[in-house]
Image (cartoon, rainbow, N blue to C red; front, top):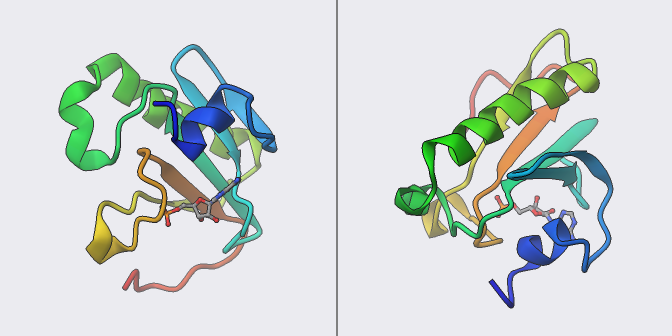
Length: 113
Ligand code: AMP
């Protein structure tokens, strides 16, 4: 999609701190980290949010989950990590391109909201 920040990042048109990529997934460090490790995992295909996954293939979605596991290993998150995908305004989604936050490297609160 022409005017999407994360599409531009995945295409290399806007710089990012890349941690992983494959044919269908790109991952990079969040510019405003909320934990010692804070990485965003995105499908290369423009999908606005989890509500739009009808337009993604099972392979594309599974690749995101497999990438999350690979990245957690790369980052040494051996004691665990949290995965969050904000969907829509009630969840304060600020970038309308499906993304999964990987948060880790610290003991996290036992409540999510
Ligand atoms: P969300 O609020 O769930 O839509 O998450 C969007 C995330 O994108 C936020 O955590 C932002 O800090 C992050 N973000 C926005 N712009 C950039 C950027 N240029 N590079 C890396 N992360 C970004």
